Length: 446
Image (tube, rainbow, N blue to C red):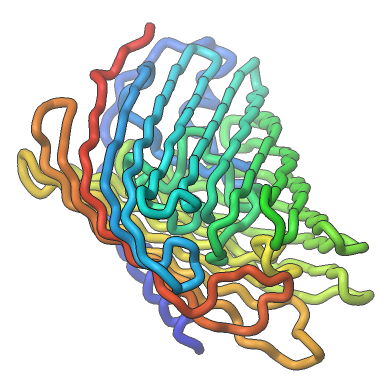
């Protein structure tokens, strides 16, 4: 077993230990809430939508609010272009607005973020960043319909991009579109303006008090606004049956299909997969899911299919002194615009801690392995191995302001040839950041 396999086994062993320990804790008593008689039985043992195209999450304790935040910071970094040839300092301003509203039969999620980075001594490095997420859930009798869309514009990949997020520990955003739907960008590249847009529609039907059927379809595109890398269109179809064993445990059997169209490649890369999944939820405290199954790959390099074992998993744990989040993905991807298809493995771990009344800290860690689907010139090439790490400590000045300091690191090995060019191979990127966070008082919405 290679080093990556050992890391996966270790992380899953830790996760299993936490889940088993939580099973011994009695669940909290919840006062019955008035519901329509036709829906009461489903709400008591409703299964987790593990076969859906959105990540499951514990969510927020507050249901209806509007929150605005602003981050201003000074940054000193090495290798800002990803070529290993320079270092520079920069000033950045980033703002974010989050809306969450839960009604009797609907939920609305909205996130809007925008920022600018200024390099006084190298104006050619100046860049801007925008993100938009919109999600809507509507319930009607036994049906539940979900719609979500995300837009991400940045000169860098979203894997390991720690500088723009006002909350580094937040890996799943408000709309929570699954990693299976969003084009993968886990290969570090040179600074290139890119636009990633993803949209999905999903329907869930409650077959009974403990069983639901889910079907979803999504479309995503990754566009590089500056030449050098390959544009990607991705079509995703998912369907499956979810069954609740009890109020906390859900099992699922799902089928899905990913179609990757790469600019300049005549034939698409198709991957069909079947997954069995298990999910466990302890209300308000712990949420865990894991899926595993075969993927049959039909690539652009020749006839016939290739068998590949894939899966994904996530763990979200909330405690009095902090939050922990772990995500894992093993799947066929389009290759991040760098490779013509890849076997991708990623792990991301994030934790936020309350150190004292005024001090908080967070840590983030990520690792990615991307192997070419087709070896160059018939010879086996080394996979691209990349990783990032981040540490932050913050001191609260008032109820709406805090100072923070952080250190971030990105590194990627030389690996094999980047078939489409442009990948950042070898040099590391370091960031030392200091700044201030300003949060407006949440506006509660009825």
